[in-house]
Image 1: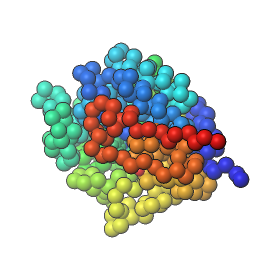
Image 2: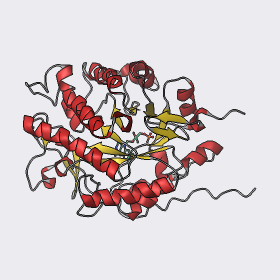
Image 3: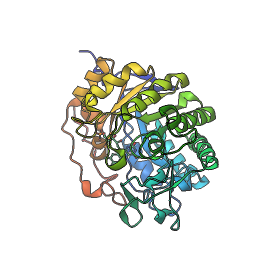
Image 4: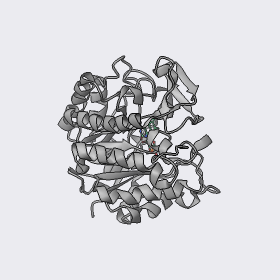
Length: 369
Ligand SMILES: Cc1cc2nc3c(=O)[nH]c(=O)nc-3n(C[C@H](O)[C@H](O)[C@H](O)COP(=O)(O)O)c2cc1C
């Protein structure tokens, strides 16, 4: 019997992956210390999941002003680099590879993170979302528009965080450029009202994310630089409009110029019927974008073994990312291989503190021969 596609090796940039199963980035809010430093608990959690050919670390703030979610880690201080080194060493010792996800929340942050000062974004437009503050979820506020100097500094902060990631032992990075975070705030017409070279046309709105790619790839090499992108249909000003798809197409079709290690493309997370993204429902996302990108494509959202094998076999994806299934199944690849039933997630502890619901999900007992 031939090996199912998910369990065949592949190359991603500088990395050889022994299988095509990736652990998707999952924010778990366990960096509940003032320095936002990953701990031995993080190391244990990720090492438990090292059956994945690739682990994409949780969203990690590139700088203090990028922070916008309580108890999430960063990658700007020596202490954080040291903490992450413990994590990457544990993952490598357990046999996997791990990349860091670089995060700037922009207007999704909150004045509670900045002594009352507003967060910054492309323009002074309230994103009308909820911010996860140290004292719970609160409505976002109107941010202030970034100056050109702040844009330059932020682009440089991405490169610094990428260098820190390599110093911490990560095998590469992924720029988080979708959902409602800073790069998406620039890409999206409703939240970017700028009249300078970072606003207006699609090419101008995409300038920031392309500058971030160049800056990170210039710092650590394109073969260690990837990106998470994809058109989203969210709420408020992030409701998809007639430029959401052309904007995503423009950015994705530029990626081959940079010879990046990968594109993580999220499938539909909302019902898309009746929206400008209707054609992207189901596998439509991957059918639409696969022809626009020649590098390693990681497909995400609502995957199982059957769908993952089918997408790889059809050439619509090279690697399949699993997010929620990895929470309660540290040995998910083994379960996918054997068809063993996945364990259920206790959602009350997903964003809690400590080991409960984090490192205490058991692997299946090895079956005696
Ligand atoms: C608890 C939780 C935390 C998440 N954190 C992140 C994150 O830090 N960065 C990111 O890009 N996506 C994040 N996501 C999205 C997942 O990576 C993934 O795209 C999503 O869960 C859909 O895939 P799935 O069906 O395999 O779970 C998160 C999702 C969940 C459920």
